[in-house]
Image (cartoon, rainbow, N blue to C red; front, side, top):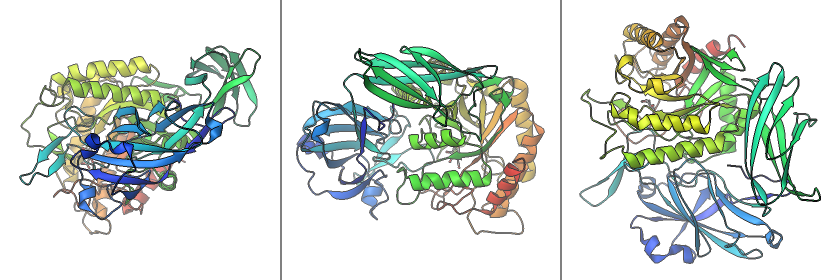
Length: 594
Ligand code: BDP
């Protein structure tokens, strides 16, 4: 799915700003057709942002159900001959959209873009009303799942098994953009090497008539290859590869040409030439073993919630660089496309994750259950509908991110039940679909410690083993000696059982900033630092370990709970991005070879 862009044949208009907003707990707006008139009794709300934390009002923060957004847009008369598209980069978790009186699109899933051709519904030269109904409910048919509890007083409360606050709203930019009527509708690029020559295979989808021509330019703007046809291969001698820490990008300009050679449409696609391969217990980028250093990371910040913000994004990347991280996992959902663009340009490696988190009735809010197993994959919990939603989430993630060189692997789920035999039937078609859609990237899921390695029924469906481990925290709290021996024994088991690379995709400890002790006791800054040391000693002794991603980059919001002190405090940075002691420690380790 192509991102909107400005260019000789296209124009883009951001709809960021203050919109009108209204809660609708009773769902009255659907029957009263609120999209037909200016939204009554509305308040201001910024887009993009989560709506939850803008006002000090629990009715908004904890709202369950429908909310309405509305704005008005002027469409210039100059757009009359163009095809006009309305695009939402994300609407969490589902949306219905009207332009003036017409419903133009519905979308399910809170973290991938969707769009509608609104040419027939917009009136150029006038002001147009744009209304969005957003619903934040999670159920056993949604990804991520959840359940709604009705309290004795009639209040509906959203429950869910994942450990981050259920922020909702228009989290990412909203665009109106134009394309010519005949246009390039999709582009797919994959890359390979023939010795020092880069090979770029491209495939364009075209709507309407026209001939396709592509030109590839290097980062200085020099043309290095060209081809004609909707599909083909470009060869670049002495190619400059994209590599971790070296985000070198070429630009592929695709032009749709009319009979006389006139340019009907043109689209520019950044291309990083690189390969990914899993060989035995190694993860190779461009044929070189790669070791992941970094974090599982949320999109989360005070006030804006999960709202995308370039200021915060840049600051986070600056901190990743400062600490010597080379990679992130986009926990626990696809992050904004701006994040991937930045990662492409700066050589940051990304594990792209779907929103399939909490598919496990034996873990709640990051906390493990009593040991008595409850089935997750069943008709009354995660069943066929959820699997269909999960499949759609995978398809939309790959469609959105397939061309990003920074994305080196798909993580299809975080901590699902991996022991229940039905997990295999659930995951086999999902892994197969991810491979079919994208044969160039490995697939994985992040494993929680529910059972010893040999009891996992799904590892062989995947290419890389991602392990989220909490020895010394949830298991053997405070006992770092046992943590060291148990972690090592378990990792050696995995390495013996499977000829696959292992990444520790989560490890860490809640740490209250400023809480210090001469003895490392849980919640202190000393304990976080020592726990990381213990894990690092073990990782360094096991060759199959090809990466360490600490949980987590920064403290983040969760539902209230006795295990959470104003949110999850496993951040190496606080929620306002100040370093805890462990940050300096990690910096020493991660920067030692740089
Ligand atoms: C893991 C989850 C993560 C949680 C973390 C924790 O993958 O989402 O936040 O534990 O408990 O189980 O801190």
